Length: 495
Ligand SMILES: [Zn+2]
Image (cartoon, rainbow, N blue to C red):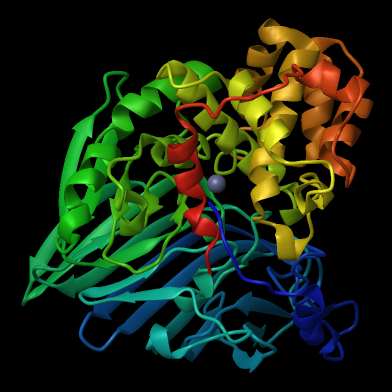
């Protein structure tokens, strides 16, 4: 994905200091952040979630969302209290059956204090009963709940959960999900994974979805509105569920002509990255006014505007590539964003090559030649861009250049072994750039420290020997035919 806001770390850090004295010997409050320097208040300390069970009701006309979240977790330290990240109105919290005290804190913290302190290693069942109108809630002055004429959508990065369920909101704490939402008959509720059932009763239809593989909170999505749903199975055997708003207007044809190729593209990507990691694939196109796309796990979010200039399979390739690079293997911290975006962008370059519209090397040459040495583009370090440049174009284009430089350094055989082996080596887990470098060194037998430093961590255009090892030098570089469609997927950077 792409985009977006500036959420300076200093702003988020304010709530970190709100510590409450321990109520019992040995137990202290869990930290209000998981420890990510880009977003100090995101996620929480002291516990690890294994499963979210969300049973909700939604009224499209008033944007009222209500229900119960049941969270299964385990403490990782002695706790007198712990936080969840959440914005809606809470009526009751129970911890292992007993009512617990709770209070709002900071921009998006819900502090839960159980009747008795919790020892490290204690299994938790946390029940949160809540309600609210998500579109009336904001944190840091923004909202990522996207209201539509017929409902709403929760999809954004790095934060969207606060508006619809309480969570430990950071990719480090992945969990499985059951999402069950009742909506008025005629409205659909779309979420991640497989559709387990739909049942109708007294004018309401309940949609029940299951994500049976670990999923980061920002990859959980919910779309409520009037959708047409298409189902099928890819030639390679992956079940596909796509959904289209019934109000896409002139973009409908191009949206379908792109997203209906999901099965074909999943199978093609499987040839590059290895077996598809989830039980189903697909995407949905709600009638939002947003411009970005997002790799929501197994059910990709696409904005209608992505298809305003006709079909674009390149954006489908990008978001589906994330299912391996970002979703199955997630970042340890947001500084590792290159592991997501560098590879999703590089998949677009491989697709261009597959489609005969320019090779990855030609695209790399074009990017390299398009940015002179004094271009600010080269001051962004894809390996640690900073929170305010997490989705900078350089993370994508310079990031993909780094991938091409790796390919040229270790050769095609080792390179494609790395591309395919990496997702399997860290499937359903987390990794950082140092882990990736170690893996690439192990597979290739080469020392890659200098290469990674040059392409990912230096705020300057690689030149001289570095450029020669990575790229062919050409006097004139022609724009590859795929360039405009690939660049169109950058629209996402608009705020
Ligand atoms: Zn992306």
